[in-house]
Length: 194
Image (cartoon, rainbow, N blue to C red; front, side):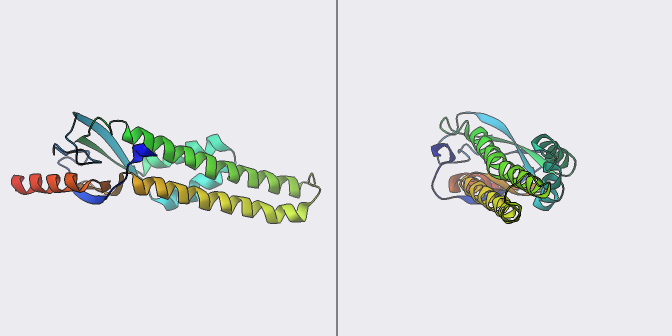
């Protein structure tokens, strides 16, 4: 978890010129106060959670692949996306890969697997293949709820320590979790430009 970093986090509003790209030029790392070691392009996505729950979970009942495909289609069609070109230090150059992998791995392990297991328990109880169908019908929703709650709790912990988009519009990108030094440098640059 060291890659996710510690320390104070703040949010910054970055203006977009074309609704697709943001070029944040401060020579301060997004995550810490270190000098940048070059710039990278990052893609931030934001999709309303209710859409993923409304369509992704029911299709997830058909299996992991249909649920994942449904969520990918929802992200592509409805999700908002913004590209950010910003500087990062040597220590944090792989930060977003780590954040992305941990977030989605936790989503699959702690959400999809209990969901599938709960549905399997219900199926076995309803088809008479279980020796304790009444107890299984009580157990299945508990498995699903525990998986759902633990998944979102762990993902929230990861995202709280990471950098994520709080808002994406055509005019701006609001990021939460950036270092205070990056926020100060971005505001100073914006003030100088005005």
